[in-house]
Structure formats: structure tokens, C-alpha cells
Length: 296
Image: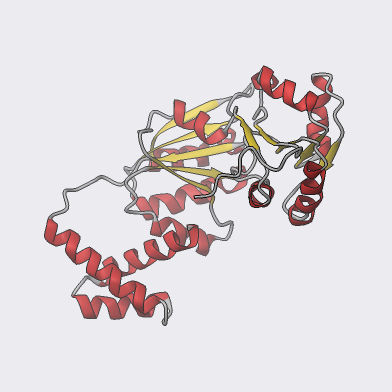
């Protein structure tokens, strides 16, 4: 394990600053102090952040840092930090690098051995979990699902057996289609919640089964307005015997070997034949293993 703190002598610090997801009153006093004191603010959209800074009378200069320029901007910011100047990283709303730009910069600064400090605060996923009335002791953050239907359905199918509460960000204009796909992947009765416009004037939470939320999203136009976090209860857990666990481990071992050489469907079919597993069980495990590998 490498410990990069406190960083090169004289180097500035990168502050990762959470900003409001709707209500400007949620900007913490510590965040205001850091944004005022830093030499530079790296913002996802300087116009958007400019409104926030103006509201609090903060005059720190900004540079843009978004998905299309993050790699090159990281080099510039590391040079800035090397000169002893501290930089604050913000996104349009919430915590940077959580389904927002910032990860590449944080990784580059960490690799350069410079100090990174979190200024915690608003995060839409955590805000939704806190009021969604679904289990929060363990949860799985999926961020944004694929926009294309086929890819989205494939991702959801791979999550059908996930026992933790799922946290998903979704675009308002896709929420009904996504709920239809969720009903197909998880079943009609799976408990779920939609948290819409969290912390804003029209904040609303819808709770019910996936089918109820799906039907509601079709009849109530308000469901598809504003920022949305979708929470889905985890798959019901069933007792797994030692034999079952050993069989699954054997299936996984065969799948990993076959998937390294063959397309997923073919690997799953052959693994089922080799291990005696059901075809659909082998396919689900293949999807799960592929998704897990992609997230590592």
C-alpha cells in the first residue's frame, strides 16, 4: 500500500467539493471557505457553477473540466498544484466523480503523489436512499444504465439476483421505459421507489411495487419531470447449502475459462453442458461475472 500524504513539499492540494443538488442552502460553510480560499476552481460547467459562486459572493477563477477535456486538463491542474496552488474540483451538482466528471483527475493527482481532500456534502444517491424506505445496510450503486434498450435490458438481467438495494440514476424521458424493463427483469412485485427532484421545490417520492411505479409513470406526467433516482429492492435471499455453493463455484470457474475464449452465450451453453447447470442459470451467472469484471 502506498501512502502519498502529505505530498511533495510545497505542492498545493486538490479539494473535491460537493455542491448542492438543488437547494443552495445545502452548501456547507466548509465548502464555501474552500471555494473562496483556493486559487482555482475546476468546474464541470463554469456557467452553472458561476451562478453558485455569485450567490455566495465567491470570486475564485474557474476552468472547465468535463468528460471531453478531463485528461488534458488534469495535466494542467497537476502543474498548477506543483506550483503550490490549491484547486477545488466541483461538478454541476452533488459529489464530483460520482456519475460526474472528476475520477480521471483524482486518479492522476493521486498518482502524482499529491494530497487530495474530500469536502463532503450532497449526493443524490445517498439522499434518495435516506428517504426511500428500502434497506440501506447494503446497496449497489449502478449510476446511469445504458441508454439503448437492448444494452439496458442486458444490464438489468445481470442484476436480477443482486440481493442489495439497487441505486440507479435515470433520465426523465427514459424512466417509463426503464421501469418496464425492470418489471421484466425483476418481476412485478419487487419493491421500489422513485425520488424526484431531491432537495428542490417539487421534491416527490413515489413508493410501491415496480408494476405500480411503472403504471404510475405512464399516467402521471410529473414522474418524468426533473432529476430522478430509482431505488429497487434487492432480490429475496434464499438459503444456499454447502453443495449449492460448491456447484456455483464450479460453474463460475468453468464460465471464466470459457468466456476468455468464447462469446458469452456460447460459453454459458457449454458451461451448462459441462457442469449440469440449467441453461438459464449458466447464462445469468455469465452475465453477472461479465458485469462484475467490467466494474473492477
